[in-house]
Length: 132
Image 1 (cartoon, one colour):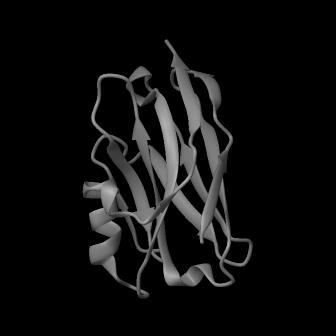
Image 2 (tube, helix red, strand yellow):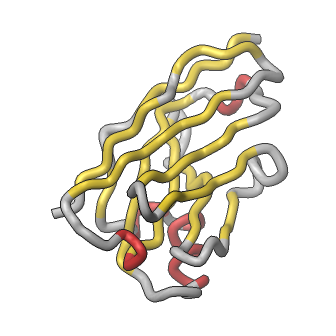
């Protein structure tokens, strides 16, 4: 059973930056997984933020493209989300997600962003607040 634990959330001023981390446990080879982030905010639908496969092929939601960067360290079982130029509309609880996939399986990466509910595993989330 894969377990995901997020950290790094907090409050930041509009225009600022923050980096989220997600540590995975429960498996010995996370290169078998596509991983990513989604977010939830009151009154809004669940939104896929970013995802990537083990080779680093990425996809981003349109509202964050160019501002957020997703990356991973397979050796350390850690997923990151670097969030720059933050806006008040980025406020929400950010969840790490994972789903088994083959290397260079871009269809899974894209699906995780378009519809985060396809992911098999997710964490408890970390809150991000942007002060305007």
